[in-house]
Length: 335
Image (cartoon, rainbow, N blue to C red; front, side, top):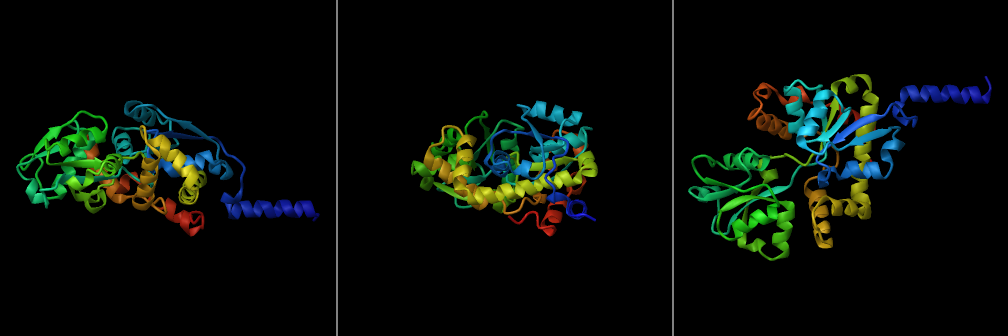
């Protein structure tokens, strides 16, 4: 056997034993992502912008549907091989007869904390008070109600919910500072504004999403169609391996990461960009993109409130919890 034939045979054997080592591109992978900007999706954007997906042998078509309704319609039609969305989108899709999708990983969620007037020292002090919330039935409203219940407060009987129109959380926080409400969920961007203006010390931080185990939103749940997982599992693993590498880039390449964070908010100054980057890298974005089972349970609970067919769904029904651990065992998520 000549040298060229021997090398070819070795390459074939290596490709069969370690399929992720080949860089030959396969058929394009259709990725839907929504909402378009959120810091929790930082690893995905960095992997895209630095060519990591291509180096993993993937050719990807990226589609931002532009709205929740268009996203759900696209999922139902089977227009996505991979969807980078929120878990509730996937639960709604599967419960509504859409092309089945399975959640495989997560790189974050919306950061929030429950702040109250400085005179309030514990949850019991909230009874009889007004609490700020989002529009009735909206995600902020559902999360506020959930946070209150976890604190032992009945949102229907113990407090009066004041519903604000959707908009900047920083604007709604003014009602808390002015004493129009006694407490509300506050986002990371609004926390920065409070800290920057020295008004944070006028409030008491009662609890936060981590203490309450409320992992929701952010559009950073990674779901893959059941058909794609069955037919092209290696490509699915290549995609999530690229996400692992994107997490590493987010930690190591501060300059590139800050450029993305600057795009994720509205009118953020340099100090705000630094603040949000540190906050999300410290408290939100994980070292490995493992599933958040609590987040899936919450997605089912929230979806079932408006979609009765979701009530019988369990977290394991809409998840493939084995994919990321497989990557770790293969050494493909240790950048």
